[in-house]
Structures are given as structure tokens and as C-alpha cells.
Image (cartoon, rainbow, N blue to C red; front, side):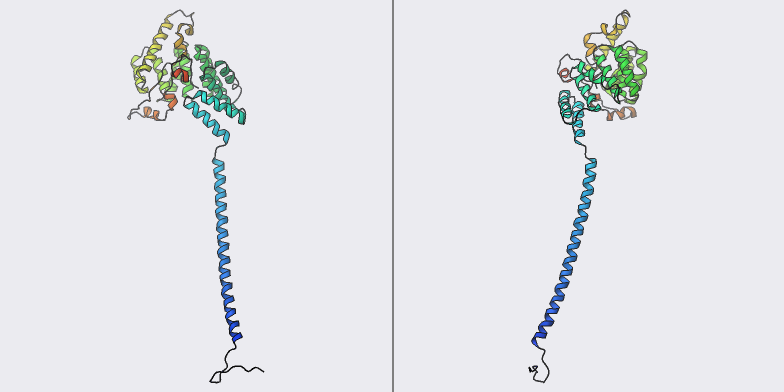
Length: 324
């Protein structure tokens, strides 16, 4: 029989194995606590990761919804090129769009404009006529009217542009083109309303004001025409061109009525722009109407009376032109 060890005072001394068992139990309890804390921290970390993933997923969905599709990006490139007057480049983008995404009504419209502005009137006419039975019929009629006007057929242009104005009754450029066509066709009375509407809809648009100045000169109101041209900030060359056309129109009006206006006017007057290379119009601070011109599109401010000239025309070629 094994005797328990006793101290010098006769007290029992705990066995070594028991002491070890106590120490081991305490260590296990401590380790269990550490394991519990580690598990809780890990779970919290995973929860945070899941929440961040969910937030990122939602943001990705929003970004995808707001991000333009690839066809929209290509169409944006086409419109930007045309706004910059890069009509040949826009034709290249149009071909790329057709190869990748096929035909669309919007594509037909921008293609028709590009064909017209690159001196391809037959192809442009075909493209515009393809629009006449759809939602872009107004654009088709306008394009046909601009083609007719570029060829000197102002009576035909007025008919087509009247249909375009019926489709776009608040489009200042369409109304301005209609007024100009009627004026060149000898219908000054019919030109007054659309030109007045256009001038009040876009009082800072140089092309619109140039057309209005031409009407005033035709009616003998030189002072009023000069005020309008000052408001439009037309360059000296542009003013001289307006004066030149007004004089040619007066001569045409004095000739026998049997001769058409298109046959009387010089060929250059029928095909070339009236106002070219217009400068940006500085606006008077004390005029609320003129101040509205700050929002005028740059292409309209730099255009011609009956349209922008294509690339070759800007470099001096004698090409007919028109604005889309």
C-alpha cells in the first residue's frame, strides 16, 4: 500500500498527478475560449465579405443598366463625326455599324444625311424615301427638300419642307429652311410665318437669323436686316453674301414670270451656301432673347443659310451642299 507523502508538520501533500490534472483542465478551458473567439471573428469576417460582395453586385447591376450598349456607342460616334462635319468618316462608321448590328431606322437617317453631304444625291434620295413610311418620315421629307433646294428646285423644296415642318412644328431649322425655300421660290408672303417662328424659337441661331435678314432685305427693310445680322454676328463675308443674294432675287423678281426662279438665279447661288464660315455670335448681356443663343449648337452657328458645306466645299470645291 502506497503511503501519501506528508509534510514535516504532518499535513498531506497533493499528489503530482492530481496537480497536473488541474493544470491541464485550466489550459483546456483557456484554449476553448480562444477557439470560440477565433470562430466568432472568422464568422464576422465572412459576413462582412458577403455584405461587400452583395453591395458590389448591386453596383455592377446599376452600372450595367446605365452603360450604353455597343450599338449605341457606335451610333454616338457616327453622330459626333457628323456634328464635327466629318461626313466621310461617318460613312465609315455607318458601314461598320451595318456589318455588326444590321439596319435600323436611325441608321438609315444618318446614312442619308452623310450621302447628301458627300455629294451622292441619288443614293441620298433613295435613303430618304425609305424613311417616308415610318416614324422618321419628317426627316425623310426634310432631306428630300434639302436635296431639291441644293439643285435649285426651290418650289419642290418648299413642298417637301412643308411636310417636314408638319412633322416637326417646333424645329427652328426645319422652319427656317421652309421659309428660305419659299422665299427663293418667289413666295415672300409664305416665307414670313416660318421665318418668324424660327427666329423666335432660336433667336441666337446664325443660320435662322441670316434667313430672316434675307427676307427683310427682299422686302426693302435694310435697317432691320442690318440689325438682325448684327445680332447674328455675321462676318463681313457672310453679310456680303446675303446682300448679293438679295440683289439677285430682286433682279429675278423683275424678270418675266414665265422664267423660273431657279433658271434666273446664278448657278452658284442655287447650290452654294448663302452664309459661309459664320463666326460665333457674341451675345449682348442686356438682351434676354440674345442671351439664349449661348445654347445654340456649334454646327448651326457655323453653317450656311441653307446648310453646311461638306468637306470639299470648305476647301474650295464648287460642290452643292445642305444641312441635315
